[in-house]
Image 1 (cartoon, one colour):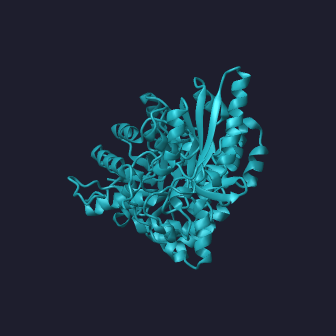
Image 2: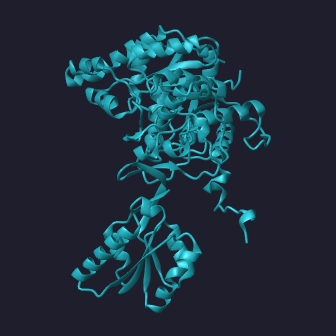
Image 3: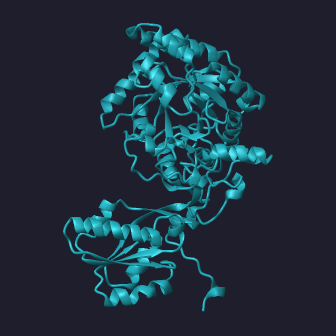
Length: 308
Length: 223
């Protein structure tokens, strides 16, 4: 065991893992978090807490992770390189571990141009792959980047993201290999809609031996409506929503689109479970946490395994 | 070269609101090449200011000069007699931001920048310039097929491309090339894709602006 988190225990015992996601509020309301988290309780093994996703200011990931811990839930701290230099990153990692957080997801971060503060100065002192290296060095060597020994070593289970649909496609498995070389333990992929392309990606990843070196969780985001599907297809760079899903959602009446979206998500979960090298799913039900129980149960992933 | 562009005329007029006689100084260096602050642009701005002031019914005189460079004290000296003897109330510089700082250091009159200094770059085509360097102080472009990830990747990634790269374009704007896509294609063409598979280590930014204001000292050239 590297960190001994629930997520690590489930993955290392060979069980199919399910992670969820919680987007903190644009304010200091704790009740919002509690409400969202209760929908995920017992449905997912651990919960990603996003770090000012899409560069919109929200309650900080670390604080929300701590609130989840107090609720008896396991958090994954998402950490981006957009807003922190190496000093802040290491400091936050030490603090997060001291609070009891054991999983960390290393990200470069969405560019601030997208968010609610496009005038902000960004940081990008290090990148996501170098962040993986940093967390690993702290954990395995017990040293900060400066070489300073850590008084108390933060033992994190190290995660990162991968986008099989980003370009150039041929380089994506190689970039995953770089994350493995840097020391990643688990990967959560971008939302998968183009299953054919994902299969091809996973085939290459498995052939390169990468699925044996890290646990790959397939990203699933249920489509709430045709409008959302269109938005994802058109405006989210690096996302690939094939036309047949748009047609399928357009083919049902508006109030039944959500139901259809859930059906699609359940089918996608079944499909990724059949793909070699997939160790679990990362279910990102964006502002739709209350639908998670329905999806997880219908996908046959309930109850979740118990670990000690 | 240093690429700059002229501030909007409205902003410049607001700067000049209280003055009746100014010195407008261009520069024959980089800003002449990028058509922002050479002799020609000095003439155009001077005319625009005169017309605008005349419309407002205000008395206004502009003396025009264009120096060899504004980033060297010896050339700054060439306007000393005008500034000190001709009743100049303010100086408007059309150099990159180094120019107005040199002028301000030398003369005891208010100095204003007429340009926004934008970046270190080059021309892509006639009338289009792009950024190529952020002066990080430790050039590493040879590791990336001759393409600078610091200035040309929106996130200055050393191990890109990120997940936002789509169709060779950057996630921030479909008009912006993904530098890492360019690096990938270039490394592939050079038969060096294996180099891209290695994790590039964390950069030492102390040679960049992050290490404080920088200075180059060449002992062999000092007099």
